[in-house]
Length: 542
Image (cartoon, rainbow, N blue to C red):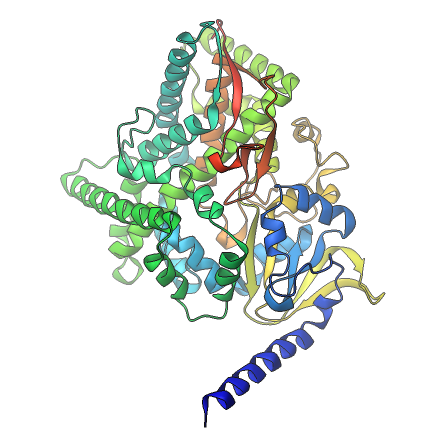
């Protein structure tokens, strides 16, 4: 058989397969959605290159919380922000919805094959081994580490502002500082390791984490996105092979991060094992993980590669996601001055009570007595879920329940939706967290008071914290969510009592970008990466 006939047979088989998939997805093609801008690229490029949150608002307003969108070659996909559907995907029986292999490989390039990338029995085993290190007591024990890191940030900012022209106020980019502080916090709390990021200590691993997701996302082009999406049909491992052999500066940085993270993780694991043997184990997350893992029966234990992957997962996700939330917090508080002032009043009132009882400073338990702090923290996590969406696909045909029926393009009324096995489903964290059917008509506004006004339980509880999609939910929910919440509260209490934040009146316009994660950029300076220039003023009553 000659090459021409083989090529014709291959093309024919490909077309037949695509049309077979389209016929099986008849119900999905009946779901309302925006016109496909490109049969080759679908919606992916136009959405990724748009400003963050804009697309989600447009979809919610025009089509509702279940939307059909298109991938490569017109492939029909689902965009989901309906609470009952999201609950079913996160918490449904039989672990039916999994990350597609190409999506897991994209995450694995940053974390290795840890709890965030494996599925099935491997995920159950890894989650079981990690659980003892992530309880409430263990999370609260990290507070002193967080407090020291943010106290160091306060000292750095005092020094920066004192050296400014006024000596009281300065305008500078807070984003880079928050990335460093968050990395130091996760290093101290999770591993007992000093990245030295705030001190610019020249730690090679810390340097590779600087704007890592933005740099990786900034390299995207239509062709690159097309190639990445094609890995959906490629053999497993193909995408990671591309990362290992690609020549771009972004891929080189990813490989350097992998090498340095592997070296540091290996060293830390050996140190924790030796401390366990010597009876000098500490209470950081890795020490608890190594101790818990050693006590498991042999077939449940994590091997060294798996423990290294957990370390890489914590290093990346533990600082990257939190840093974005901290940056978003200062942006919102600078824009919403009344919220900042009300929060500061509660902080100072609580501090007065603490000193009246004979203590000098906050404990982690004091946060629970501060309703407005808790409300502000939840509202920040609602408006800044960091991860725009999570991608899932059902292992077998499924029927997706809906909170709100919709009328299909054919005029048919749908109260649930048939989803064929393998369908790409984008669960929109942003879309759900902005859904007016869940959060009320002012869902697009930053209003912490909504958390003080809420009565009763949600009809379809979704997330691990505050019914938010921010930390996902169910068996794949973020294992470190308590860690992140306590760090956010520590940050707010420490910084808002020492500084006042406002937007600089210098003509610069800020926007949200969705490259890698939701990040602030200066319009016209997007090439410089994430920036959040704020006017920061020292307060004298802290």
